[in-house]
Length: 486
Ligand code: SAH
Ligand code: SF4
Ligand code: F3S
Image (cartoon, rainbow, N blue to C red; front, top):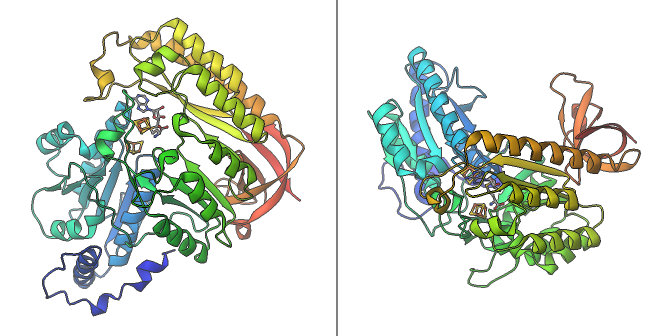
């Protein structure tokens, strides 16, 4: 399932004996052509194509980056596998938002070291957010010297070139950039799903919430030009995509720094016009920048899904100030209330952190109060994780873990209760679902997603995947429905 662009590169026309071009993306096409020669040679030597495995360990933005890596690998001629066991080239696309994300990477590296002993061809690459931390690179150099390639978030477009350098190299190839103002367009992508796709609209983050490492590892905010985004959307639709998810750390500040500024709401209006596109989602909205115009566009739209992910983080104004979130409890409640009034069938989901430095029992009560008042349709709850280099890491009153665990459990119980109540509201009604997959354990059942992001399981078969069908929501089972097609 390649997008048009990858088919348009005519590798045979590239003279790989000449000097590499300096301009992007042509320089990368040149290195892809060189890698293709290497793959041909591998096939001659081994009687098979080399295999690669890309493991995504992070958020939707990382997942989209993984699709870009896969697109380049398959253009080069690698066979893509879904496990590391038989892979000749393994890439871990890492996340570092919380410490447990990092621990997973070290665990996985230990396992890969075992696989590598069984397959001497195997090369291991690491990329993604965690690689932007200098202390991580030091540790990898010292204790994981078997890793072959390390690159970061800012130079991912250079993957073909770095891969070429790695193929015959001994030792570690490391290329990390501190930041970039560059956005390279027109590189190949291979999607995980044929019918839906993420679309980056911006990169980086300027918000510097005091607990968060993302601005340090993803760099300053940069928006793609609307014409580039819309061209990508049209191409995706031509290629069978019916649902897109516009991706950015804070989509509500999209476009403000472009030469010809445009708002996120205006971008949505343009995306809505793309014929053949059925659904539009986006991620993530920061409450401080959510405009009335956005609510209006959502309300009037036939394509924008009835789902808004609106991270709360804390319900205590005091803690929100410490977090540098730039809204108060009251402002959040007012905003959520306004959205629910304007768009009554919308699902509001959120992220909440428990155990931020200095958080008291009273602060937690404030958070529980917001959960009760807003009645989130779903909430991701996290225990605060100290990230080196962030302002919160230097704050006094870091809270002992036992205490946080208890608060976390209380919060989790409450969010589950409210979410159950919210999800069950639609029992007995008929709604549209986009069918996403055949059930792994029962091939007479398929799973679809409602506009409000709730899942529904229904009888069906593989021919329904990628189609929008009317489904009767018969029975609510906590967070999902059992239903039947109408
Ligand atoms: N840009 C998005 C969030 C990206 S990170 C936004 O602002 O909404 C996803 C979530 O991880 C955040 O919403 C936050 O709840 C959580 N998170 C980020 N840093 C964290 C930390 N240090 N400890 C615990 N959770 C954290
Ligand atoms: Fe992190 Fe805040 Fe940026 Fe989200 S908006 S990525 S939480 S700094
Ligand atoms: Fe995403 Fe994790 Fe990076 S949440 S932006 S992959 S640190």
